[in-house]
Length: 308
Image (cartoon, rainbow, N blue to C red; front, side):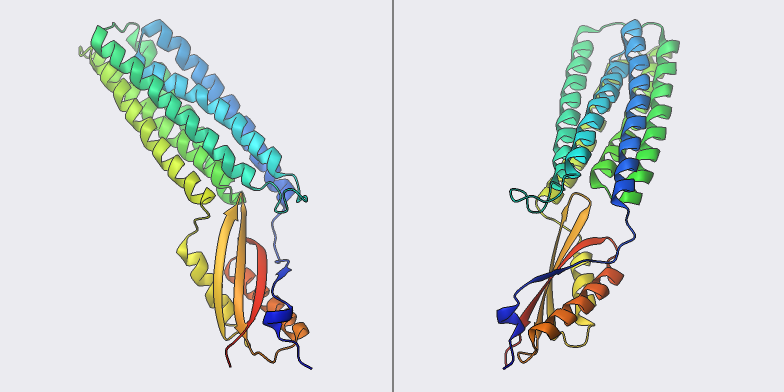
């Protein structure tokens, strides 16, 4: 008697061939976070001291934002640490989502920095506060540009290599911080040229830059947490599954949990297929999906009996 795969063997998970070294990837991520935090802390402290000395709100906003990045690095570090824990009865998928939740912490800090920078800029604009030691302020803003660009580039390279959305988001954050430093620099140059309102106006520009990166990071984080994926991933998975002989029709779903792309395939097969044959077919589909989507880290196959 034949056993119908869709009735007796509804779902099976298969390991995907992978060249990823998860331990090494986490080590690289932690190193990137630590190095960037140290770099931003040094940059932010120097900018903060110069902002207090010069009275520049543009430089102050940039300094506070850079120092807030140190706290976001701590949030990301905690997320990576938690995601190391394996599956349990309470959390059968493990804690990969901790990396995505860390992104929420990054977004919150960014928006708080924007609020502070905006408040200080408006206050100076209204009170017509002075700006002194402009040359030192210009030096501090230039340091902010260089420091953020170096840190952003480093985190982006590592984030793309290990496929970490959180680290990539943090890198984009640092990259835009370099633009906010540039805004502070322009404002101080304007003051140096005899336009005192240049600094508070630059402070407002810095605030707008921070709000922009806050929006982008928030959008990316919400997209991940809502199980959003690039439609091309679904198309590729269905194409790969449909290319296997014996699969009449395939329907795919996918979602990210941290750095793990989980792919689920429902494949309609011959109703007379035995369970063992359906299992073998699922392994072929798994290999096809892994070839088409090398970033996939989890695969689930469900065989359905095709209508007669």
